[in-house]
Length: 181
Image 1: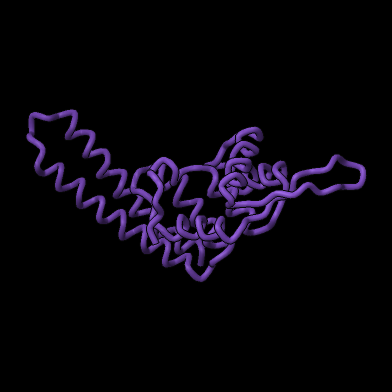
Image 2: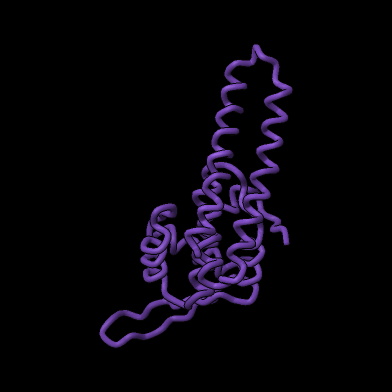
C-alpha cells in the first residue's frame, strides 16, 4: 500500500495520535501524556497542537469524539479511531520510511513502536523493508557521487556525508531486530 501523502505529511504527529487511539480510545490530555511518555524522545508537540490535530482528524472523519461526564471532574471529549482512521494509519504504517536521518529517527521508530504494539508479527518485516529501502537509496547516492565532477567539492562532501549516514543507519537497523529478540 502506498499512501497518497507528501513526504512532510508522513512525518505528521497525526499518525502517532491515531495509533494511540487505535490502541485505546482516550481524551486529548491523556493522549498527549502517552505521546510524551512513550514517544517523547522523538515526538514533541504541545498540548494545544495535540488538540488541534485531534480536531482536524475528527473533521476529516478519522476519529470521533464524544463528551463524557466524570464524577468530580469536568466533562471531557473522549476520542476513538474510525475505520477510515484505521485504514489511513495502516497505509502509513506499512510503507517504508524515507532514508534521511530524521525519517529514520522519527518516522521509522514511530512505525516500529506501533508495529510492535499492534502488529508484532510484522516487526521483523518492517525492519527488513527499511533495510532494503536504505540500500536502494545508498546506491542512488553513490551513483550520483560517481557522476559528480571532482571540482564540485562541496557537493561531493554533501553526498559523502549522506553515504556515511546511510551506511551508519544500515549498520544500526539489524541491531533493531536483535534488540527485539
